[in-house]
Image (cartoon, rainbow, N blue to C red):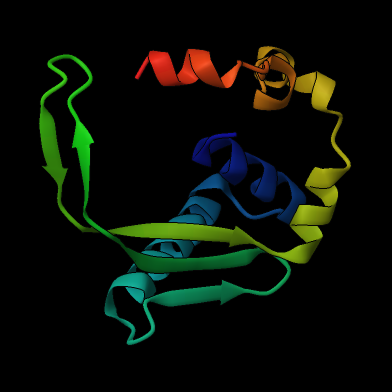
Length: 123
């Protein structure tokens, strides 16, 4: 769903114009961003929805997948979202089969046992 679709649906349900609704939706998004950036906690909790929070992702060592050269990934700030209980409950009721290839490619279904000597010899 896009912001435009959200605006259209809210406008239809409330009787507000799409212009009025777009302004309210945009102001809501702006306020969420402003709160994450400016507030001391860098956190916003929306009851029955979830929590947005700015967290520090630690730096780490990695490899460039093309050149295989080691690289240092510096620490950075990221926005995280933790869904509220109601959202988690509703999502847990979804049918995994509806997610097609994503469900078929899960680690649980594609994991196979590899003898230890094979793993050790390929290192």
